[in-house]
Image (tube, rainbow, N blue to C red; front, side):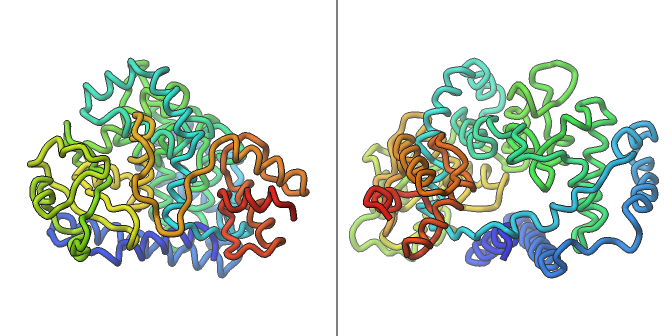
Length: 436
């Protein structure tokens, strides 16, 4: 199964386990559920056809007919020709990642790879480098600066990958290919292509500046064109909204997204790691029921770090991702962040990354079967040893990307490590040290 389809299915299955009880949350849940269902069907169809189900007309014919849609949106012929004339659709997006191995990560592995030694270290440097900007942003929007550092680190490694051709590609050839030939979500891709054209029409970016993921997510915090248009903020007051270059606009627009679409609450924490008393009824960890921190305390639930709850009247839900593992109290701001990506795993890694950048320590309770995250030095050693054995981890920078994971997976298969999950952890390093 291709990676994009697997991710859609994982998110869908995660949603199916918890149906919100309130009407407002249920409406949002239904919308996200339909979105994921459509994505699964589309990606499965693309995998079946092998190259995308192209429309009956050629791309050139489609592009000329699409001009009318663009004109109706207010896109001039000059702008349309500037972008679409002689454009070649990037049809590789149809089968993206299909040739790559599938990585089935446990939650502790997912967290370790993202709340990594490298991200924590770079995040602390960025916190100092952009202290003035982050302080102003927190004052203006109410969003915790460390939440902003967490999303920046999760989405683009603090801007490190936004112009790297290894990870990003020109957006217009990708969106045009999807709008022309993607079989089940064509309307969605057409709207995003129109949004991208609108951005050029407004003079916010040149077409060649707009690089992003295969799906069109761009900039420091990976905005889709719709988010750029409707949530963007000209925070540096240069006359345009631009999520590349300086991080000002990208961070401010994302904070606006948390506020307007996620209903972020100024002055509240996202939640915390919790400690459950012996004999605690784990059925209360249903990730549905709101109780105040004071009520949770009366049930014996405390902060894992032993500190008192700062605001006993604030509400939270209890989540126990794995029996015998860490528990978490999730406040409304956890869900505000989750509005950016409907995955609990993503959101948990993001807020934990922010906390580690803030100076807090690792989780107090380990996940069953888990291990601590390797340090940068340990990952560099692992990469060097893989290279010496003839594998290509993509360098020796102490970071974990798809190249390192593929190299690890090949090594695991070769030496009989089961499961061959591609996770570059301490057990793999120990085996590498022993020799093949």
